[in-house]
Length: 317
Image 1 (spheres, rainbow, N blue to C red):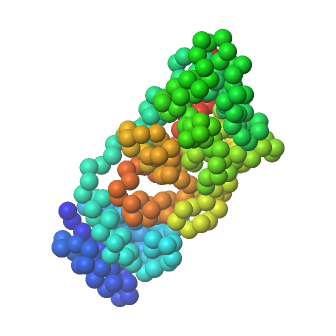
Image 2: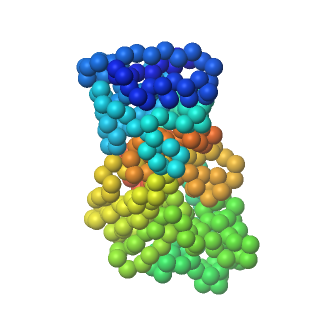
Image 3: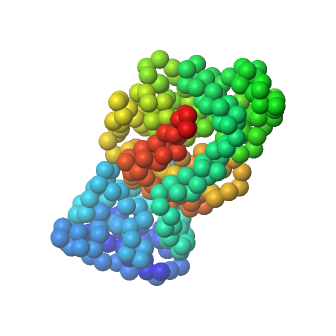
């Protein structure tokens, strides 16, 4: 593994970067002096100092947040979102460790997509009950009680409890210990980070960022998502009107982390599917959490994934 630090002449933050790299790893570190914007673009220096690991900037900010290539000074964010002159020893150690792992070539969201596909009920009564639960969430902001579903299950030869348990077992819904409906993807009966206003009349919570993005397509209604960047606390909103989404901030992205198996997605991945105010914040979070596999999705990718997972759930076919 090759570690190289690009810097401008007399960069005051070069010394702390090199010192922290020494503490983070025993790998040799080379430096390269950059004196022109052309050289910065050629070698990939997004401000001074820039660390390259095998030629890749692990703290790449992207075009939507932070500076582009050039001979300007570069600043970083620590794990609390504060501006610092160089990454911490822990951030550098995590970046070096992550760079040593095999690269994930899975298409964005494919693990999550496969997971949710397995959760689709095939039995007609189970599908009808799932759709009734989703419609209740969408119209009242709350799940129905098991008793509210008895009319749907009466002629099936199976009790409501049995059908709800079947939906729970395939991870279409999750039941609380008392048998009440705790969630039905994309909806949560309890508060989460992602609040969604439906058609300017009903407020509901979504299980994760992708679930929130899929609600407008599922219901064919306008929505407004209010969430926040977990690294900075900055608000992120997505307003969908007539199928067109407007994001604020304009550079916001979504991180999708999903383990292939290991229990219901509510337990294993929903907490890792979050909005970030910009690509740099998402990159910083992934660097701090190398144990969480996943991908950063741009807005178009995130919207497409949400629509693909949930847009068809209320169709009758």
